[in-house]
Length: 385
Figure 1 (tube, helix red, strand yellow):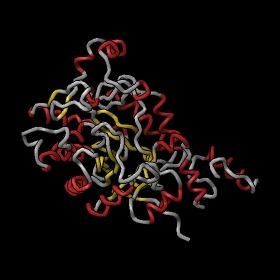
Figure 2 (figure 1 turned 180 degrees about the horizontal axis):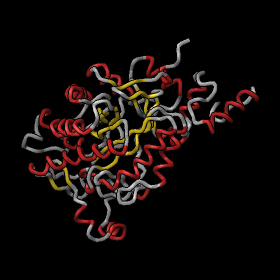
Figure 3 (figure 1 turned 90 degrees about the vertical axis):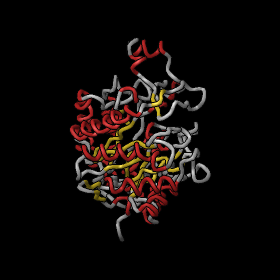
């Protein structure tokens, strides 16, 4: 019997993943002035120890004003590198590949954390946390001076002469990610953040070469890809996350066109998500149910001729395996289900009948679990029905 595809190694450029299970980047909002804390070490480490092939750390901001809230991770200065390098070493020590997502919030910056309501931050709250001088430095910028939703503060439109510097921030953050030791890098071009704002006719009303036509609206994203790839080693994979459908004028056809342009520039995988432009957190290809965003990964893979990663309410091992077997995606990313069960990869391997010795996880776990499985034949793990 052939091994399940979910647990078949995959090599992209010079990096081999031991399986196709990916920890999707999930904001933790636990950094201190951009610096990684013990929370980040624990959070990334538990997923690596749980057996995932690739652990992508959360959206890490390429410049200070790109932070969504007070707790965003940062790579806008060299001093941020050592804290992230510590996380890299620990992830790798558990047998997983360390990855990082780079992002910029644009007009969705300077907000309270989601569990604090997510409303725009106040000057008083920023002064209390960071000092009064930080308010003006935390500039809300966007392709156009359009707020979203309309009750939000009005951002400032980036001047044509400012755009090269923003792109350079992405390049320098990629350099720092390389110096920290990450092996996979993902560019965040989804969920209503800055790159997505440039792509969207809803948010981008510019009349220069960065606005108007589809070709012009793709320009900023593609220039970021080129600058990042120039700093990112040729033998390391580059991912691009897209809201394949945003329900605001950017859809699958436009995403396919962008992916076709990005692939020859060095993008290896499209991470296929949705939504985030007009207020809704996600938009599906149908009802929000198991695997509701998988059709996006399937279409990008088929029509753009590029590897794709599926994400969105992928919960069960046999469900994930079927997506791969049917050729709908190349990688399976999980987020909230891993919050519920950080050992999901180990659990999935048992349910699919592989890894009887628990070799997927570190020896301190594997020894005792294998011993129990060998000695107690009738035990049913708590994650089984």
